[in-house]
Image (cartoon, rainbow, N blue to C red; front, side, top):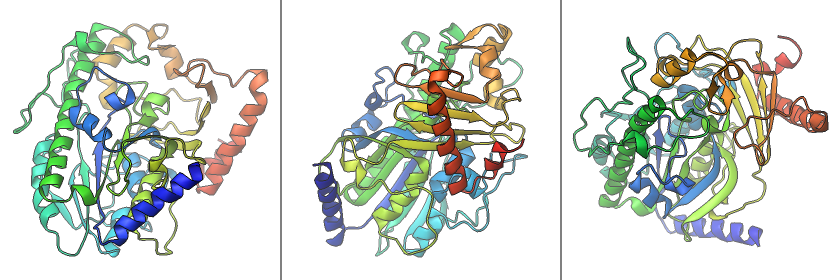
Amino acid sequence: MHAFKAILTAWLCLASVALGAEKNVVVVVADDLGLELTAYGNMWLKMPHLNALANDATTMTHAFCTTASCSPSRSVLLSGMHNHANGMYGLAHAEHHFSSFDRLDTLPARLKKAGYRTASVGKVHVNPVAVYPFDESIPGNSRNGVQMADNSRKFIEAGGDKPFFLWFGSTDPHRGRGVGPEPIKPNRFGNEDAYPGVNERVYKPDEVLVPAYLPDTPVVRAELAEYAQSCSRFDQGVGQLIAVLKDTGNWDNTLLIVLSDNGPAFHGAKTTLYEPGMRLPCIVRNPYLKSRPVTCSAMITWADIAPTILDFAGTTDGRPKMQGRSFLTAIGEETPTGWDEVYASHTFHEVTMYYPMRVIRERRYKLIWNVAHELTYSSASDLYNGATWQEAIAKGPDSKYGQRTLGQYLNRPEFELYDLESDPNETINLAGESEHAARLDKLKAKLKAFQQRTGDPWVHKWQYQ
């Protein structure tokens, strides 16, 4: 039955395209957004436009970034290659200065060769520009999605015989300014500025639902309230973008993908490969999928996004294969087969933050290999200076931070093996338990094979440090 449904879904998509419909593509990337959507069971944060989109699209319930860091994650989205293979080991900007390899044949380059008009608006955050070429860079404040959408109208309307690819990169809900002399005050997450056209949704700390990986304190609630306001601003930008696509007659011929680069900017999420850092929202609206909405449990990663887009665009051309694979036909099914494990690879965030991790994540079990486990886990500067972390470190290493002590968070064992079914918060490490020895060995072998298959230089660390 599943096989028949997949074949029918693929046929319907291809049949619609064959009738001459354009195949435009828009990718919307939030910056540090977690699973704070009604589609993922979160009822307190108000994001009506994304929730409405989910009701007319496929919600991927098991979508994962491969690295919980801005530039590396975006490089995976745009290359279809794990960041250890594309060279973007850490952040692109300032003194961090990481860049992808010159030899890459990336998504915008391939689409351009296939006859697409390409443009970016807002945050792209990858280097070098020549490897990630867009025809046009549309101006706009990357925290004002309404403005970004309006500024994109001319590009979307240009039409002609060429389809378009638009990268729509928001800076919301990333932390903002305010990491200076008084870090115990909540970060504003960009809310300190005015954004024309945006109707700000302000939250009170008592409205907040504190996730399990964070301590429930007034300071944390204050920061989460600011974070929520930034999320709602992102939602308004998505709503305006959808309005522009509809106004220009492109709503029913555009593949729209909305996701986040990594989890929220709090310790325990961003820059970690615990679930809050890597399990993320992903809503995909394929206009040629006749039955919507769909809730799809396929386990996908951001390495699969570019191949899926190329599949939608019909640009298979024999050039070097990407490391991800297309899930285009899977989005029509609730439980497609063959999508039951993912891999993740994190090495840097800032240049000073060397803490390599490699992960295999199955439906039930997850193995994290902390390659340089002798090191103390390092902090991103914006997270470190934030009120949530400053309050935590003031309490000392034995204090609780979410479900762990602060000391356990900072000092990690070489291997972390979790049963996500019985331990969703990843607090009971099974790696040292004799009854799990065979499973640990099996997952280690699969992780090493993944590294070999994807050209990971850190595969040598199995032999020497």
